[in-house]
Every structure is written in structure tokens, then in C-alpha cells.
Image (cartoon, rainbow, N blue to C red):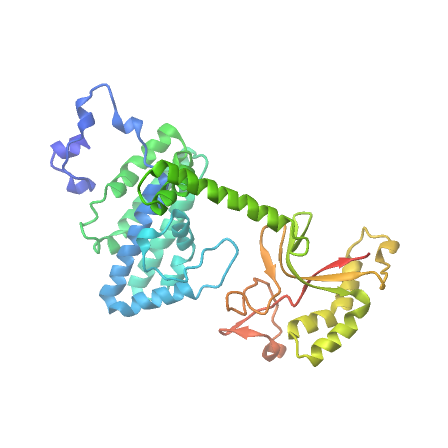
Length: 384
């Protein structure tokens, strides 16, 4: 950097003409003492810049119409386990967290697809695809020489494509983070290993939870005691909530890491037919009625595929057996399946794979021109 400044080549390297005070200390190398921190350089640095410049590009092409279309596509994304949904659009990017930006990386190529025309559209999508590929590689726990060479080539290729939106920045892309990433990331990896070891996200999250947020809630007087009191109240309420929640036996049932949530009905096995008839008269939920009507058939099929059950285990005492109905279940892989009429005002919310028979296409449930399947009931069967 010092050589670039002395040679008048600062613009070529995207750096400012400003002397570094550490250069006056000959026995101290500031560049060996610091590394580009991944979360602030990528998640909270370059990617937010990409989003901002992309929106400027869209606005330059067709005004606010493409911005509105981009935001509408983001809000239309259906819920999926582990994916943040942006119902409030992108009105305030400055308050987004690193986690929210990472979720945005997953969907942005699909959100932008087709907004522009011709080569401009394909170049923009290609830019985001290269970014995602580059970001995934940056998360590797270790690099071989060949992998590091491929990573460096990908970084340079992305930087060339970045020119497409870089012209919409307010300072011709003279960003220190861009310079650090392109010129210091690879040497830092060679010296110190994977960037994952430099990530400050854990410390940032703790700092925000236990310092920043309580400070903002205070009146800025006697700050330390107010922060301590806020944190203590929060932790106490969390423990109280856990105690109350865990002491509600009818709310959930856990077995082998599968958790059934929100028990809303318990039906004696011998009264299934009676309950179904009553629901039909009262015009109850068609999903529950349909699920109970097919319950015995499904139970028989279940017993057929459970090979480790003895014949005695298949015997049901209709006088004592109970069926408990639940609204949702968390599976062993962490995903949820829900059996409710709607979830967040959307009828389609379960990612259930179905095979469509074209001859019965009109019989399938559709939402927004998409076919989907729903779980009618979730139950836990008690033998006694």
C-alpha cells in the first residue's frame, strides 16, 4: 500500500491517498497483526453494497417499477425451514443482520431473474451466482494449493463482473473492504488458514444481545446498572417461560427427538366414527374429517411397514386407546410439518413432494398456480 501511494497508483488499487501511522514503526507490521474479518467484509460489507448498487441499476433502467417488482418477489417467497422471509421488503437495509443477508444470498439469483432484458440480465444473474460460489468457498475449513488458486481466480472473475453495478456507486468503488478482500484475503489465508477462524459473528451477537440492545433501552443514566438489570430480567423471563412451557403436558409430546406441538383434541378410539359424524353435522374442518375417516386405513398400513412389532403389539384395545391430535411436528432432521388450515395466512406451507397424475390434475389443490399436498391430521396413538 505504501508503494502504491508513493508511486501515485492509488486509483489502480482502489485505496485512498492517506499515510498509515503504523508505517513509522519499523519493527511492527500492522498487516501481519490484522486480517480481513469475513463477516464484516462479506456479509455486512460487499454483499449489502451489491444489493444497493443493483437497486440503483434497476432504478436507472425503469425507475421504481423494477424496484417494486424485486421487493414483491421477495415477499412472495413461501416459508421454508431455515430460510428468513422478507415480508417487510428491503426498506431499511442498514438494520439488516449478517444472518438476514446470508438468507438473501440464497434467493437473490431467483428474485432478479428476468427483471432486465438480454445480456444485461444474464450478466447480473451471473454476478450473484459467482458471489454465492465464492462465498461458499470462503467457508471451507481448509484449502489446498489448487483450491486456493481456484478461489483466487473466482475472486478476480467476480471483481471483473462487479463493474456492471460498480458504476452505480457514489465513489467509483473506492471501498477499503473491496481492496482488502481482493488483495489481502489470499495472503491472509496462506499465513493464518481458513477465514472461518477469523469470524467475529459469535462475539458480535453476544455484544448486541447483552450490551447494544440493553443500552438502547436505557435512559443513558447509570448505564451499567440498567444494562445489568435488563439482562437479568430477560434471562429470568426466559427461564420462567421454559418452566411453564415444559410443565404443560397437553401442549407437546416428545419421543426420540420427534416433538409434537399444540395438542388441540383427544379422541377415544372407539368414538372415531361418532366424532366424524358430529363434525360433519357441525360443518367442521374438512381436513380433520378427511383425516379421521382414513385414520384406520392409515393405521393398518403403518402396522404393515413396522417389521419389529409382535402380533400382540398390533392388538388395539378399543375401550382404552386414545388418539391425540396436534397442530405440528418437528422431525428428527429439524424440519416442521404442520396440519392446520393455514399458516401465516398461507394455505400452502408444507414442502411435501407429490407425484402429479395428469388425468387427475383438476382434483389437486392449487395455490398461485402451484400444486401442493397437505397433512390433514397429525396424531399420537395411545394404546392405554
